Length: 374
Image (cartoon, rainbow, N blue to C red):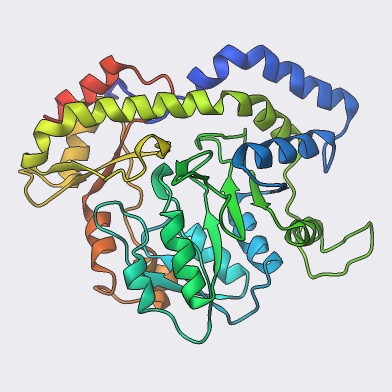
């Protein structure tokens, strides 16, 4: 079988890493020589720098974004049995983290234009057990902070931001992670700010939450061999923290590159809207940092999403689907809902397609993608 040469990859991390390759090597070598691998100076430096860049006081590095949510909810005072509102249109990790915190995820449908959580639908899901809402800043676009804060104040709820795809995203004068009680980030390699493995962080302005999070991530021990909480082993190691700290000063430039690429996609795709090819709406202007660029192949299109993806693959253009199966229809999580419960989410899962997006994606490559779609 002959392989199809890739003309436009879905992600190209080499373009980010190649210019700073020697700096990365020197940084890692320094840590290796020093032998400072766990809870060391490099981690503290990155925690401080990323929190400041996000507009908050404290950062606590953990092993992954899922742990940042699960342990973060516990640090915020969420108790077993508490109900947490989450969008049905999210990666399964959001639901898994709520369950790991021994809370109960309550799914809410999404806005069909932005794919973000629908706060009007969330109103109807509130019960006496509802304690928090987790807005997922999906694809790099934030949920409206003003609307969330108003919603939370009216219902006395904690806002815990899932900002795994929204590093330095902005909306209404807020940066992602800066307006909730706390927020979780992922540093998975393909994120806008990614490490060389798994990694995550909780950020907050609350000193008590930050200190409890430090305890929970380290076996529940505020000091060595004294275990005050039932915690976990979830620590962002120094090698990863050092790489992230080295890359952090480039993040705003990389985000602008993504935004520029998205604007060019928008321009070229505009004539295809009447034919059923519709980009997910941006209500954040330049504050959307486009972790993913997602289009919707609607019923007006002459072909469906799967047919289009197959044709693009044959053209050497890699694409993704984020996400093809909603949380409540996953085999392991069907207790979260039934088919038809969240119609906007279910429709999007059948129609969305993520196009190539990364810093360094050229206009020529974007033209190739849109030409192939046309």
